[in-house]
Image (cartoon, rainbow, N blue to C red; front, side, top):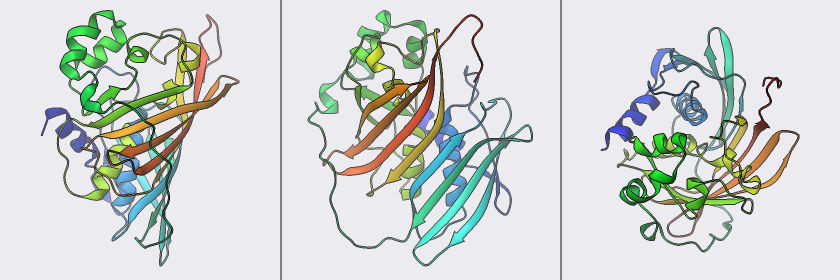
Length: 291
């Protein structure tokens, strides 16, 4: 197991403080705010810790305040409903005595039913796209300092963009972004871990997709960006340590908010998850308003 994956699993391994009360930590890196995917993943772990014999099938969340990576995050779980087929949990993440994030997750007892799914786009397989070594050798010198810093450090999630030019430099494109993703090492067999890891990874590039048509990126200094809400539906079993295609698009951006959607497919072309998010994408002004 890679060191980055081991650290990710440690981040997702919450400490139980009391019944329905958990504590999570943040990795001590250079980020000034807690990564949104981390809070989604940890909150889903907290919810899963209170549910037996069924897996999460959907979550809906709101980011309320930026998280402080220097102190722990407390997750309080409300056991809203325990039904015969469905279970509902609400999780509030707290720092400095204030809620910074709220999530509602629904769990479903596995059962048979109708089956259909969207078709996976035709894209090159991940093996034909630049890998870590090629990216480091060829593309890093042309990257901005922020992107270069991201690709130079060890990461738990490997990204292989279908159109790498979007990552290397910002040019106007159609409102689509497709990227293969997987963990950089094997994960435990527990299906809940794979769902929590995908929840973590689902926040990586989604907001940036709403800036693709404008030739901008969330890493640019003139862009103030923040996730506002996040929704994720799990459709079919999958492994997050095997290649998944994350096909994203952005139907709309207006009023300093961008809306993005994502479909996640496994190598067999099965739709395994769907994602939607709205986020702040504000052009910075010298004396502009704050979020």
